[in-house]
Image (tube, rainbow, N blue to C red; front, side, top):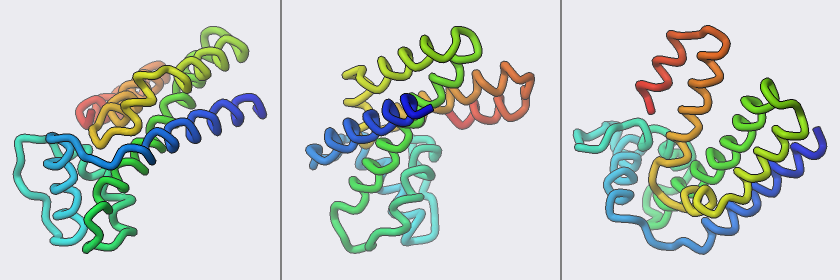
Length: 157
């Protein structure tokens, strides 16, 4: 388990390093993050063509930041994505360990920790890590014959 902890720490550090260098939101991300800000500081979730799932997740760290900080929304998205991007590695480990054993599962989690596209997704302000976690989580729930929570999680994704 120490090896898994090292892989997860590596995933977290790599994603945090990448996110720290990203100072600009994406076009779509500004809409998502505006929804998060309004949820936290105006008490409402405005209608948008973007689904509210990601803004609700990004609102969790945003709630602990100052409302007048212009970079708070982007930092909140980075915190959420770094955490979710690292969680994806842990979920992949759990999924693979049941089928392939500890060593192969650790290898798969390590690949996910180092995969460049997953690092790039975790430094973004968009919802890819949340979507990946939802898919892996739903898969694990379906393996345990938990259809209703899996369906709810897939619907959220």
